[in-house]
Length: 238
Image 1 (cartoon, one colour):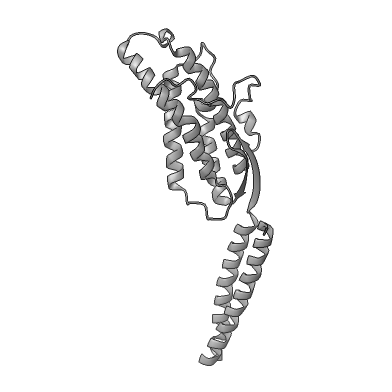
Image 2 (cartoon, rainbow, N blue to C red):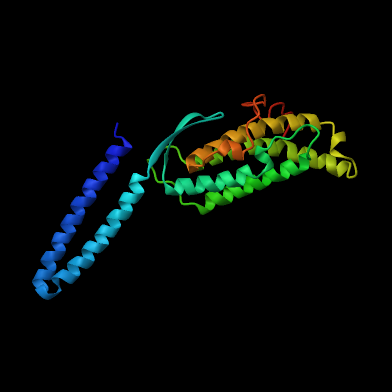
């Protein structure tokens, strides 16, 4: 199996050979036109080629492999470049500042606020992915794959189940507090599962972005919180 290091070494060899060939062709061409312009034209061509080669080398040497363990996805290997780090950082910032990663106690916060925050994270993640350049083929598992799985495996099932149920209660009892909602306890329990799983995705974004002390930014991890369960468990209908 060809490794990334071998591929980068081969790419530099090919690029060097191409650079030399183009430079030699340029010298021959200007020599037939007139020696007076030889040094000027060759210098310009060489400068452009060196600049392109330097940019290619800078991009290639910054490719790194990162192995991550993600809920429901097992262990994955990512090939990370500058664009991956940029997108991962955006996803990390958007996620770490929301209720989606901050567990609420049973007597704290509002379920409606948590659902609104999760909806916002869903929409923002899609916008970040839409604005980013697609990862090139052959670069291993991509950050887009990770983000889309967070949306489809964690956020979408939970929101599609609980958003209409809470809205139905709010419509039927507009002046009643959430604490009187008969399904509030079950909703909070499944919200805790989603938050725990999403936190693992956020930690993965942090590793891909090269963030230091990401666990501290998340406020630490609660050791006894539920993990790995299906956020739509107990679904009785659509």
